[in-house]
Image 1 (spheres, helix red, strand yellow):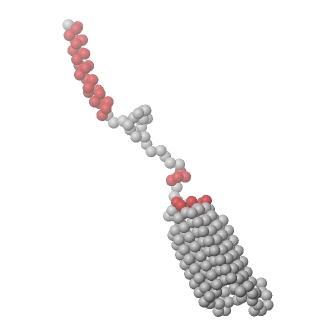
Image 2 (cartoon, one colour; image 1 turned 90 degrees about the vertical axis):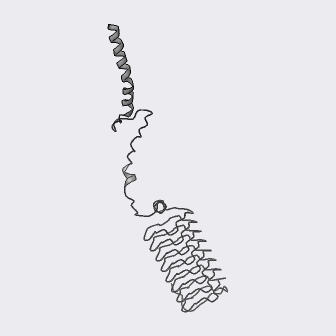
Image 3 (cartoon, helix red, strand yellow; image 1 turned 135 degrees about the horizontal axis):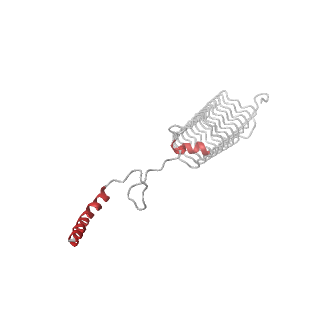
Length: 247
């Protein structure tokens, strides 16, 4: 009798094993339960530090533009069309950068390095470029109206068809620069170096060229109406004299 009872209980136990396995596999895991090693349940996403989720302090500027502003450098970068208006980028290094149609209106670019940069059609109106390095830069059709370029280096730069009305280029170096067809009305080239510069077809109406060095420069078809040439060194190497020295 006891043997029959024992066999019956064993049969019941064996019958319940599949049900236990099924329930163990189908009951959902608690979301608050720590994952065991090898579990297929994905871990919750880590919480990011506060600094990485704060709003961009520079609005909709691209990451590359923000990096340039923070690091003051972006060599050979493509920043075409970037907006740097009214920012302080003094001593920024943008050598060989592509800056086509970039906006630098009223930007501080004091002692900036922009040698070899592509600045075609760029907006540099009223930009402050004191002592800036723009050697061999391409500034064709750029707007440099009222820009401050005192002591700037523009040797071998291409400034063809640029707008440079009322620009300040006192003591600037424009040796072998190309200024063909440039609008230079009422700009100051006082004491500037313009040796071997190409100023053909340039509009120099009212420009201040006192003490400028124009030896070897090409002035073919240039408009010099009302230009000041007191004590300037002319293309033939001779010094002009139109009145008392003025400083």
